Image 1 (tube, rainbow over the protein chains, first blue to last red):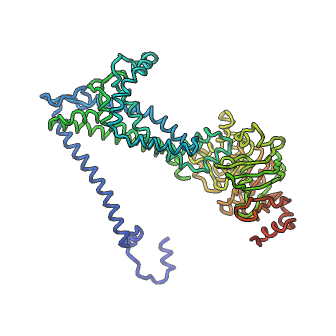
Image 2: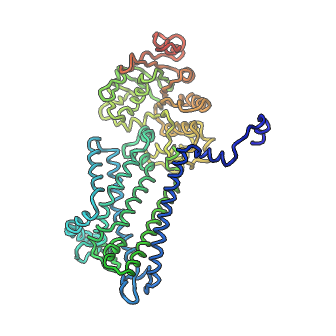
Image 3: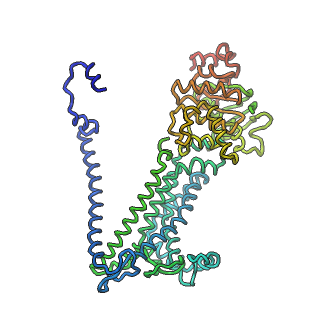
Length: 334
Length: 258
């Protein structure tokens, strides 16, 4: 193609070199463009450097601790960093973190999506504004306040629920109740669900609001009821957005510290029943132990924090994979 | 099969604004009726009153009667959802469901209406796509997303989706205004075939198109901005374009409008 062009062309005027053309195409020749390019590129690089520094720091300190760990770091049910030799492992913390987050997601995602649908597709406008405002307020409450509310009000009031679960679902083993105070994984899960509700609701609401009118009308014109419109046009279009919203919520649930530390009565056992008091999470364990830990104890806590970091990365990666798998159906190309 | 539409004394409002006033007309079954008129004269609004889509717009409200054979679409106890299953619609911008495959797009309306066996669905999807002159182009990619087709193909996909549920009437709101001339021609040919099975009403800004595809033409106009749109006249297309009975129609179609 190029050769024919050149053959027909009049004697060539001096052409800018290939690199110059490339630079011009990227728009970096004007001073404003150059400054902006430098700024945005610099910010990007800075972010990567900070992330690498954090990862490097965590890995170094964690390696110091793990190399002296007498037990298996991944499977030990104990956290005794001041013993000689030290024995500690993250099995209970990983279990508690994941289980409490799963409970929170199971409770919060359906409720949040329902609220978002109600606000965008059912509620009259003068009602949806105030409700959205109240939900935003929920997000602004500090987590220690949630923790105190959970410990002082939620825990004493959950005995009824625990008894009911024990009566009807006790046979499954995971809802068996011995009658202890409700400082359990289930309570933590419920509290986390309330805490992550606003973020999932808000992001889902934005996503549902962006469903193009023409797709909803297409469904309506086929004779779809309001619920069928939501099922045919709104939910599929909002699917990847809801997944992203849930991941934001999950990220908060995985890392939540003060609320969990206030409500849970921690121990280093894996309880089959979600209603048994005890267990622990990464963030709660770090918060409870950090202030009194020795230098070595801190390194061990950092090692556990690194595991939380890896779990969060894995969860985010999985979510991205789910979204990418159906990208061509995402509606982004409509 | 195709049904007659008989509109009398129809007013449509947006909130307190009267958008179209006192419209009465009859649309014969198995014919194509074109609505022409300047922008804002209420042709699309009127079209959307024929399948009760107007009231979906916030503040949308309709007075008057629309008879589909013997049934008043605005009668007491009539479910708008049921009306829309009888009166299909194709929109200005092609709007296949982006999250669905070609196949699922065509089957979307059927799945709302009841349960079908897979083999029945296959048959109806094939028949509808053939009916929309799209089958040969998409038969090898029925499971690919509908939004991956070209604009003209997407619009024919929307037509296939609309006719799959066997409506009595097919409404088209400027179906070619977002398409190139070749795709437009394909749709116009299709309209000629579809009118043997359906009652078709089409809104168009393209007067040549109205002349090419329609049997009857209705001219809408409004006195001024802020005034309600009105039906000026409806007559055989040939007569509207050769010898209309109202001066305003003549002015509009000969370009002397305004």
